[in-house]
Amino acid sequence: MTAYAEMKMYGMTEAQIRVQYMESLTAKFSGQEMVVMGILSDCQEMQAMNNPMVASMRSNEYVRKQLNVAKFILSEMMDQKESV
Figure 1 (cartoon, one colour):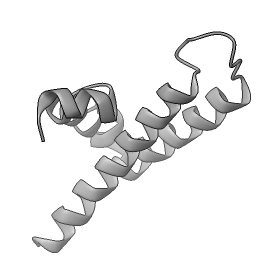
Figure 2: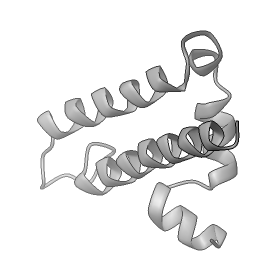
Figure 3: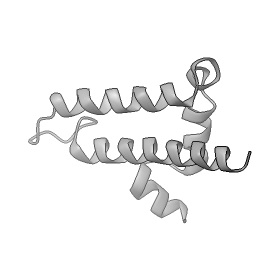
Figure 4: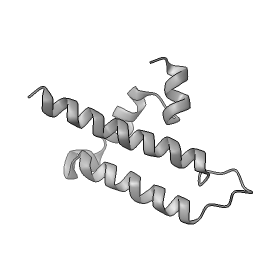
């Protein structure tokens, strides 16, 4: 996937997801599952506070990208389990 496509899908590149989420302190101490749970919780909060008249980080587009980040992390976790 190109960097452009990754930015459209995730709001960042896959390399950035790996560094910012998958290699974070939360991931190291609590596991990547907890990282995904945090992303999903954040999405719930953002949707609850969504104001469609204001373009912000709480917009549906931001939520969509964060959900894609969570799915990417889950996919990577599944790939890791299959390779073991």
